[in-house]
Amino acid sequence: MTQKTPPDRITEAERQAARRAERSAEQLRANLQRRKAQTRARREGRADEAEGLPAASHTDAADGDDPA
Image (cartoon, rainbow, N blue to C red):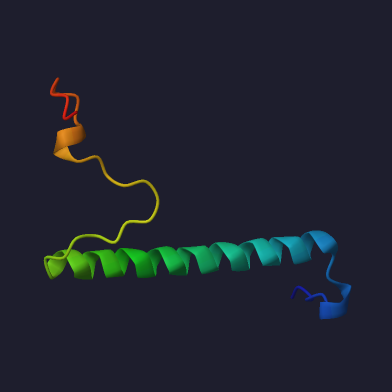
């Protein structure tokens, strides 16, 4: 059997790896919640509550028409 290292003897690299894994898991959970909310919104016919850059509208497309 392999022996487990007691918590007070964990190396700095192992601590960093554990923190990285915790952050990754937290980000994955947050992403999953956003995706679920997006799916529910689409199912109910509501627009997405996008974060970040807004989606380009069809009037902004490069169709040669200048709205100004």
